[in-house]
Amino acid sequence: MAGALVGGAFLSASLQVLFDRLASREVVSFIRGQKLSDALLKKLERKLLVVDAVLNDAEVKQFTNPYVKKWLVLLKEAVYDAEDILDEIATEALRHKVEAAESQTSTSQVGNIMDMSTWVLAPFYGQGIESREEEIIDRLEDMARDRDVLGLKEGDGEKLSQRWPSTSLVDESLVYGRDQIKEEMVQLLLSDNARSTDAMGVISIVGMGGTGKTTLAQLLYNDQRVKEHFEIKAWVCVSEEFDPIRVTKTILEAVNSSTFSTTDLNLLQVQLKERINMKNFLLVLDDVWNEDSCDWDTLRTPLIVGAKGSKIIVTTRSTNVASAMRAVHTRYLGGLSSEDGWSLFKKLAFENGDSSGHPQLEEIGEKIVHKCQGLPLAIKAMGSLLHSKVEAREWDDVLNSELWDLPTDVVLPALRLSYYYLPSHLKRCFSYCSIFPKDYEFEKEKLVLLWMAEGLLEQSESKKRMEEVGNLYFQELLSKSFFQNSISNDSCFVMHDLVNDMTQLVSGEFSTSLEDGKIYRVSEKTRHLSYLINEYDVYERFDPLSQMKCLRTFLPRSKYQLGALRELSGSLVISKLGNVVCDRDALEANMKDKKYLDELKFEWDYENTDLGWCCAK
Image 1 (tube, rainbow, N blue to C red):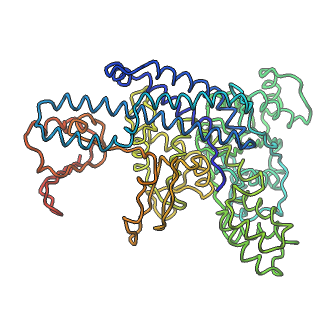
Image 2 (cartoon, rainbow, N blue to C red):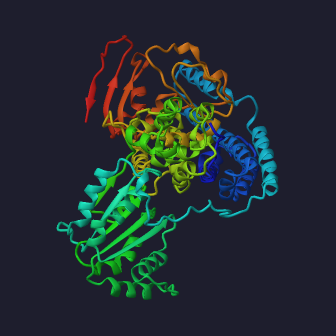
Image 3 (cartoon, one colour):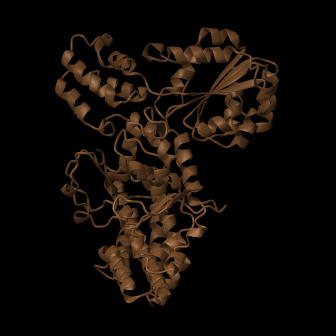
């Protein structure tokens, strides 16, 4: 696996969480109450702000400068360590609150709680809070000096290298497996929008980066029946920055076959309106990212005068774009079949597309195509890479390497852009998904709960419940093609293998996924760990705590914590009720206020016997 690509915006989101915690009432009150130095926390905040200023520039430069990449890894370590300190302070503050609330309980009960509290915090007490703060500040001071040596600039810094804009031309000899989809969409283009109130109909093609959305749009644009049907055609590559002036000007220049020097949006729209008035037109907007319906309304204003039956094809990675543009039909584009993928690969990898004279290379090539999981862009990149290689050893090297490690600048940028333009709060949640092994089917509800437990969800200004916030995050990632519906289980979701690889690249050594009952060595940097257990696994074969500096842990420690958790939802099981010694303990759990629970189950101490009761709303 290639080295970790630590996202600057990911770290910015983590730093914002730290800044919020540093200013929180609980932390400030505890520091003052324990007579600790709040000056150290303020100094820590200042040092974090210094490195935060250059994160955007560092995110881009890490792809070409290994020293910047290492700098980001070290910064991420420091951020995690600072989070640990603030978590410890918050936990200590809660422990003091629990002690005060339990002052009237028996000595034995308090002792039990304190024993567990000490166990939970044991990894943190190797040194004092203040000395650890000073150590992190020293590290950040060194990193602040290094940023100048590395040439990191404040603000936006450098931008990702721009891709070539798409054009309407296509080499149809390199297109496989899209005949049926193309035919269905041609018929949509030739229809007259009888069901639409608009004169023009918007048709969207949605899929993850590299699935061939642009290629399909090119096939449609160049189909002879389509050419004869529309009076006017125009192709515009929109890309990441949506500029109504540039897009309008490009459309006008295409329909007039001449250039315009003006940048006045009003003049451009007036001329475009006059040019297409009552004419049947086809417009392709390729690679649209902007999800703002207001921007789309601005762009479409001069287009609504076209003749009924006019069409707009939109290619995008996001279903939200299709919704904002009020698409009347959306085609979700998946990968190629294994047969079509192999045909495409052969066309590029072998002379004249004939693999019959190389049976050994055929066997390896089929495995490489399988590894690309039907993604045309990846298959093309691998086929082109291997075209001049005739040794089986060279093909094996490609097969056994991660696609991200290969000397090609095609596959990685196509998916990297999707991650790069994610909002920072979604980057944190997406990165956390690196705990899932490839092809792992996960449920939305469980993933949202994991995000909640890790503190990855931002508090909503509209006072939405955290589960609702998590659901919104999930839907955004799903709409942008980071998640896909599972084919085998309607209630589950999966990630494409290359998307899963992206999570691994973003997380690096900070996240580890264990599977197949193997024994792994876990890095000291590891903060998130998953262990995929099968029926043959022996639980004792791996001890992660002996190999890690710290794993973040969530353990409710008393009935008072349970009482404070008013927004619990789903199912709740409370066991060992034989330990409850008086009715006041039950009252303190405050079960009556947990209005979002669907199921509540009480269990006593009798094994495999439920003597309690169960209720569902």
